Length: 292
Length: 279
Image (cartoon, rainbow over all chains, first blue to last red; front, side):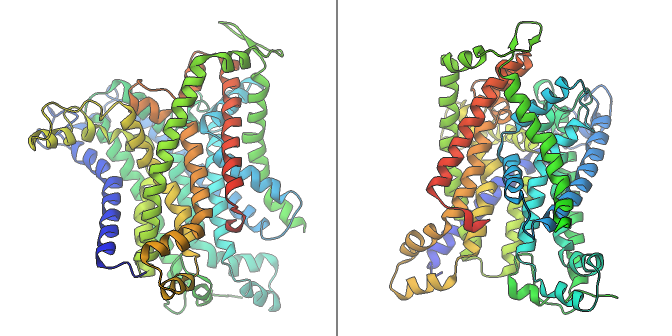
């Protein structure tokens, strides 16, 4: 759009400020987590050390950091796998009309929109009323799925809206069974987006707080442990924890982005400038490797 | 086709068990009686009478609605211009994707850590106060920066603007560029193009973003608790407090009222803007 040089400069500056606003605070605590042993919660830096990271692994400093981290990572893995499988299956289902499709879609959106504390409270009560013990691998797993599945399904919707059915039809004409069409045609094309769903499942579970609060039972997940610390820990050990957990999130994001790039390259015979934002014309330039 | 039912069944089962049934439990328990030691199954309306008859409830709703209105306005303004920049100012598809990812990545990190990370910036001896003192702009540290309503709104904007950016950006990317060219050819100035072409065509995205932000702020309790330092209240926090006092039926009645209010707000937004084209 012809905004003029001044307009473009102004809006570019605004965007840069927004990015600074997004990342600035996190960078601040990453720097502060390397405080010297006598350093406090704010600047100036009182020397540079790994003291607070070492403290993190001493049992008395933080509640049960190791246990909470292990539980959170394991739960995030389970949520990731379940989210991928169920969103993918539901995404495939929604490509055709079926009775109850509208109701199921409404329910999925409701799952995203109903305040988290109500979901947490409701599941807690349900387990209470039925005499079941809430635990991170049962009630908290279900609670987190109500948060990750809508995102997974919405991503699958976006993918299948852009999906060119000609590839499947070609495979059908060549005699491929429904499973072969899925395994050798559909899956390779949508694989990068499936990794995206996995990333959402993993990170949203790993950082989930409100829906886990009343459903985790007696063993805390990491965000619950961190929340407990905010009220009674007044040393940079809190920042060290922030740095470690944010670092783990970035690791997951990096791994997912790299996998997506690799899969995209593998699915593209001709190197075309296609991106996930690519429109119909771009996706037609992608040639899926049809074996058989 | 039978396959569709099999494929959709797991989603339906999980949402049925962990969303639908819990909401039913919530409604049922909201009619239960309770005393200081236990919950007594029954059918009483006292919980609702307590909730609706208490001036604390009304004040808390007013405060929560005030937060929601401010945060909605700020995230809409910021989200619109960020999306506009990504969709119309950035030309290359790759740059667009990379910058959009840059905006998305913080969403995939811990909300609690992102809130805590404001402490060294806003605190009494934080970066902002230190800088302002050194510049001589203030004589004593500003107290309202941290543990205040200001801090709560700032954290909301920090956490939730992405929920505005994503749907608005998505809608803007679908605007036929020929409309804009036609407007320019017709002599429209840039602000006229924005006001009469881009904004009206972005309305579905704005509506979806608004639904996200409104429901997230209306139901929040953790941001208010952490960032206000116990000085401010929200409906979610009121419910969380009742839960910690084990007053489950009261919390449930409160929750049902909140749910009704939130659904009413969504219905209002959907009445104003038709989002079906986006789905």
